Structures are given as C-alpha cells and as structure tokens.
Image 1 (cartoon, helix red, strand yellow):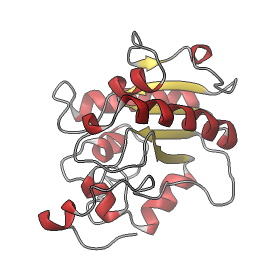
Image 2 (cartoon, one colour):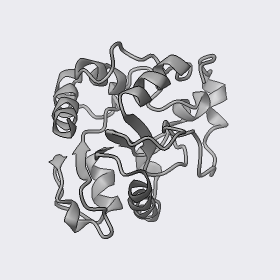
Image 3 (cartoon, helix red, strand yellow):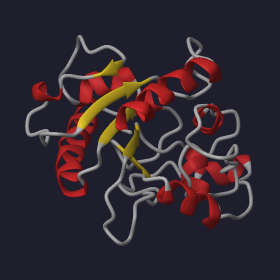
Image 4 (cartoon, helix red, strand yellow):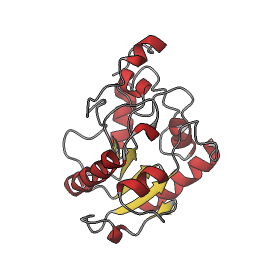
Length: 199
C-alpha cells in the first residue's frame, strides 16, 4: 500500500462520488477481530494514498500507539505498509468507515449518507462479529444511528436497530486536528479504555 505522498494538486482528483474510496483493513481469512475501528469517511489525503487516517497531523496513529494498541507510531502519510497492516490484524484490529466516499471534510456528508452508512455498518458487524466496535466521531454517530443524545464512551447497543447481541459499541472522539477539544493523551485514554474492555 505504501507509496509517495500526494501533492496538493493530486488531492483535488480524489473528491469524487466513488463509494469505496479506500480499502478496509480486515482479515482475509475471516479471523474474528478484537476491535473494529470505524472512521467517519476518508479524507482526500487518505483516499490518495489508500490508507486510513493518513493525513499528516491526524492524531489517530499517535494516540493508538500511546494507548498501547500498536508497538510504534504508524506513519500512513504515504500509505499503510504491509508490516503495519499485518501488525494491526495480528492484534485483532480492523478499520473501516461509516461512509466510503472521500471528502475534504466530514461535514460535507449528508444526513442520508450517514444514515445509510449506519445501516451498512450494522450488517457488516453482523458478518464480521468483532468483540467490539469503536466509532470515531460523536456527531456522525448521532446522525448515523438516530441517537441525538449519545455521548462519548460505551453505548447502549440495544437502542440500535438490528445491532448484533454480544458486540460492544463505543464512540470515541474524532482524531482529526479539526477537533480542538482533544489531545493525543486524551484520545489515547479513550482508546485504552476501549481496548481494555475488549480484553
């Protein structure tokens, strides 16, 4: 997956209606995941290099490492290396998105797209059967699942129509630099709580 970092001009071409802008990080052999991490949707940089949370400055990978979920800070800015993908899957961590279409900002997604993405995720979770799911972004979660009063942390999954029994559902903050309320340390504390609960 790894390659070159995109230029500013390169990024413009990735704002398309492609519903599958990047590949998921999921086991090919059907192995059960300990944790399925769900981003909102790919940013343009992420789509350009086909790697999750790839934009430089995004706090996802540093916070995941600080929480102990990876053994080093993954640098996905030019793509996700095979070794890094293998490490994630070997630890039982998969990554997907609520919506597959790439945009410059998550707030460019429509309510309908998010609701459709929530419905797709419920079906995906029923197939994959991870121990837990963590959605990274409270505002998108509220819209996608019709839960306007939801707060960060573990959710009452029985409120989600069709959610499979026995699979915990969490919401963690959006790790983008646009979320000024969070730091790498505060994000890491959230990831650590999710990870320990899945153990």
